[in-house]
Length: 133
Ligand code: ZN
Image 1 (cartoon, rainbow, N blue to C red):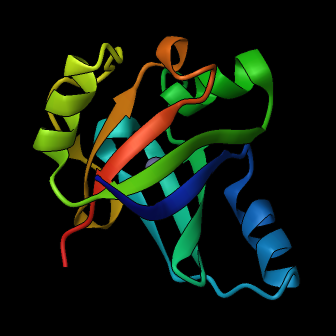
Image 2: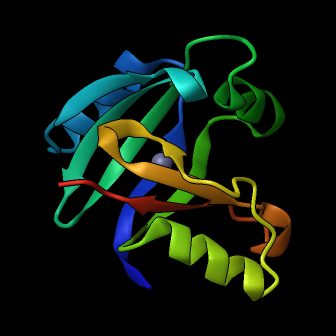
């Protein structure tokens, strides 16, 4: 069901500043993108077969703005790559995992994504991600 860690999502206040930091570490910026449905602007840094996803809010009611308000900047979610997202959601629900998204929704990179609820994952916001190639 899970292939690899697609990316690690990190909530940041200042996207440009955060990009600068990861560039200083020697990583290469792959792309930036606004994801309207989530009210975020994201930046991706590939690291071998996974990525760092920096997320900044594009509006005050963005989930990222709320996250930073509550917990401060830092790791916000872990995304696992799956082959078949609808099937993974169905299986997760059958196993008693609480879903935030019952249906896949569009994420960055043309991927379909869905979140599992932290109350059934031990406090970690888990994203399942089906990447389109
Ligand atoms: Zn993500």
